[in-house]
Length: 311
Image (cartoon, rainbow, N blue to C red; front, side, top):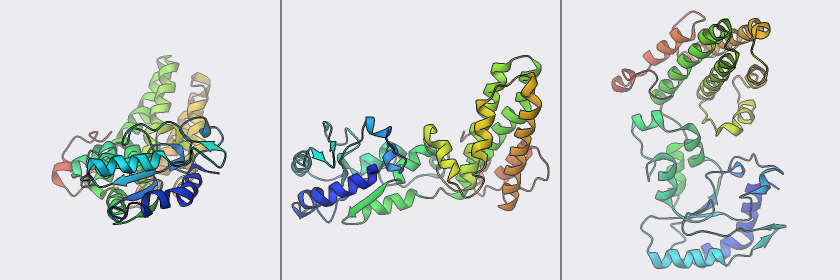
């Protein structure tokens, strides 16, 4: 059973009656679900995941102006829910929002990941908030939303503005060029094989970010990056290619083959940039494509900011 399934079943079995039905004065203002940090919110949990923070539980999202007495009553009601369910035990719960489950103010939840309590962000903020934070603010599942306000904020954050996406994409393309097309072979020539391996890793890291942006998807925290990459509709095949690139030794014997792989990856990414109509460059140099992508940004202030501001 996945964490989302466990959470939903636990809410249906006990939470709805204890939280929603017994608090009619606030039931039309709260939301309940499982969202935020943790592999279970992505649907990526497995047998290994259950060794920590895996328990029957859910989040009770309450309006920011909820009075302290009501918060106390909600916390107490949540604490009294059964400690065992479907063979799993609940862990100790800290005060409001202190853990991943329990009673959490709506504003506190979104501010933690985006800096905004209502999901309203400036274009500059959109350009720099870490992608995995935006994913944490919009992942998981909402089981109940009395007013729809929590869901409305999530929907506000689900898609990055196009200009912010292009700024991030341009920066990642430029750094991919620097690490892969330029520095990898130079490190080999210097006999700095450890540095060459770092260059391959940096190239792969920024190419992965570029691919998520090409797919209009938020990139997860690094330990789930390759799994999520394999599920993307555009360029999922890069998962195996990049894994080979960063997991095999970099030295004089492997340099030619690995550099050929780097150029092949660049060509694949450039093809997708051209298919999407977001570059006018016609060459194999990622740097030129990076600046061409940046030129597509409509907002003058963002376009004229340093191309690396988002990375």
